[in-house]
Amino acid sequence: MKLTPRLRRTADEAPPDAPPPPPGPPRGASVAAYAGILDGQTLWLAVEATAGTLALRDPAGEVHPLRSDLAEDDPAYRSVRADLLDLPGEDEAAYDVVLVPAGGGAPRPVWIAPFAKNPTRVPPSRDGRWQLGLGRTDEGMLRVRRSPTAPGLDVLDLRVVEEGIRVTFAAGEATELRIVAGDTVLAAYPVTRDDDRQVAVITESGLPEGTRQVGRVLAGDLPLRRRANDLANPNAAVLLPVLLREDEDLARLRLRWSPEGRLVARVVDRGEGGSDR
Image 1 (spheres, helix red, strand yellow):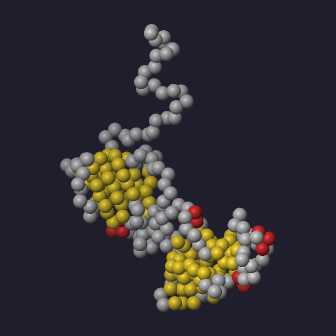
Image 2 (spheres, rainbow, N blue to C red; image 1 turned 180 degrees about the vertical axis):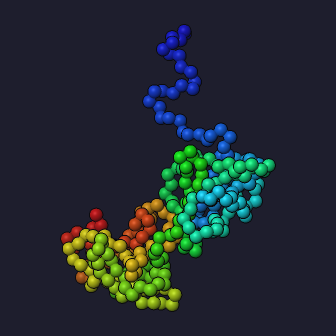
Image 3 (tube, rainbow, N blue to C red; image 1 turned 120 degrees about the horizontal axis):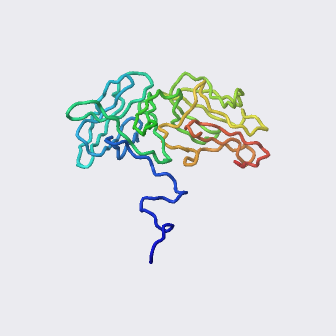
């Protein structure tokens, strides 16, 4: 069979409606095969084998070697597992991941492919000071970002008791637990100290009727948050206690986690019949 010009197509031609090919690394760039901060403070990094030392370069241009506690056992990759809490300074910063050539010369930024969507998020560091994360520059170079964690208190325990829902959270200076929607305080409950933690009990008696509002749960002015939150949508995966009406087996208040891992409360209207929709 003889091919006409209309039927001929080279192997590297794509159909006119095909998506563009994924971006590739610049010529000569070091390429990361994997990067992750799974525990909130440790960088796991594997780069296609190249002679040199992996490091972070701060905004001022100073280079900080990544000191690994991981034995390199794969000749195809240069690998590190390094604690990022050793980075100096107390300010928010973005660090370029670079490879310092073995024979000297300028550090070379490390390229990484676009990140896949992931149902997990990087939790705060274990000391609660930093929120670390990974990013890409416009050219696709790998960066480590560091910012102070937002103020808040960790929830240590949630449970149903005879009086209502008992909320135990980290020690602070709060005197009351408040449910706040916008600028309106929907309900407030006294806080007591129990050793190195604080406790409040959410009861039905303080809740307003005729509202379907969702309020933030605050200890004083500080939000309560999920400890070591590593889920992009914790509410979809974590079952929280429900406060029932005293005279009916219907929901009166439902606790939830926001996407950011903050504790919120939904006041259920009597006319909803306990429905959460």
